[in-house]
Image (spheres, rainbow, N blue to C red):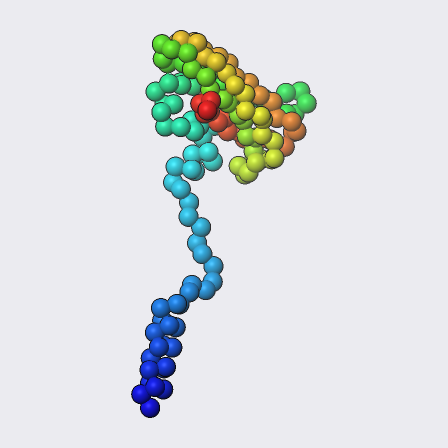
Length: 136
């Protein structure tokens, strides 16, 4: 009788200790990651805030209906900095149209300014995000 009781207790302990979650999980959203959905220019690294300034930006449609974007990027430091810039073109709802430019390497000399520009490959783009990172 004690043996049967021991087996039942062991089985209950195993079942309780090994319970697993069944069903769907809620996705976790990183609060800072939503900036790419709200802003037209984002710095992908925190330390770039002190280095790069965006002193103006413009978007317009060309004669062929493709979105063209421009941004004046300024080096705020007294030393040369190398960055990479990319544009993600999006539809009216903010979803990527599948049109992302290649990362363009830009060398900004001391306290200089550079006008970055890109053009969507198709007329689906209505919004955009310019992404900036340092060259690694």
